[in-house]
Amino acid sequence: MTSQIGTQISALAVPLLILGKTHSAALAGVVSAVSMLPYLFGPIAGVLSDRWDRKRVLALTDVGRTVALGSIAVAIWLGRLTIPQIFVAVVAERALATLYSSARMASIPQIVARDELRVAAAMDRFSAEASALSGGPLGGLLYGAGHALPFVADAATYALRIVSLAFVHEPLQPETTSRRRNLLADLVEGLAWFWRQPVIRATSLALAAYNPVYVASTLLLILLARRLGASPPEIGLVFALRAAGGLIGSALAPRVVRLVELGPLFVVTLFVASLVFLGLAAADSPVVLGLLAGGLVTIDAAALVGVVGFRLALVPPELQGRVNSVFVSVETAALPLGALAVGTVSQAWGPRAAALSCAAWMLIVTIAALAYPSLRSARHLTS
Image (cartoon, rainbow, N blue to C red):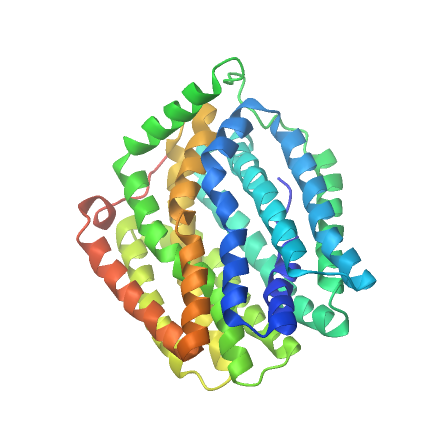
């Protein structure tokens, strides 16, 4: 499969660009929230990735993402960048990313044996965290050198990823597809299958409560670091430390999921998140911020590998795109609320208050997960 390069460099640059132009944490939260709205169309993306040629989808979506991010760089160079353009470009990039992700995840079981899916999920996560490890500090350095450079760098990595598809020779689609069926019927079939699976349903609902604060932690870390007087390169270091935790967690994930069942691993991750956000509120340096965030990502990586491996092993090949996209749509449905909440609370009472609010919310989510039998007792699938 193609590597997960791209998006990591400009992900740091977008909120820095908004904060630099407007000095408004609330507006930065709004932009982050709006950029997540395309995730709600995940089920449709799943249907399309089951019907269309997945290799072509991967290539064309990256072409569009190159254009979207490249347009921001061009506008900066011309001195004509506006907040509405940032909104449009970011939403377009995220919409294409949703379709890309659906096609990519649905392709994995086509080229990986069932008993190796957890390892494949760990490698996939490791690739993403390696990209984040380099992208965090690189994004900060490039932004400091020139505000357009992070967007140019990501556009270039998308172009390289398109070229890498030429080296993927395995078929990415099962022999039986649903291309001749009604689009609505395909969608309903995926939704129905998803809802009948108690573990998949339970983990998706738990992630729907967890992910808003986890994803909003990107904006929160930037705001906390700026509060401490950190420069863009120092902010990049924070995200490098966080990504390093993801690398460690991804590398250890196959061993962890063999030792700890899915349910306990997931619940512990939720509780650790509460402790980490509490620590972020008290952190007194960018390095401490990065180490705490890295600790959360370490255990989060192992839990996510377990969830993804379970799902890829259980879902029939012809339903992979639809079921995976329904799962992602459920777990990301509330993402805009997290970004809005962090931005709004930070604007009114400061980022430390936002971190404490996230800690309280994650404690509530942990208690709810313990009360959910299907989640608490979930076990990994074996071959």
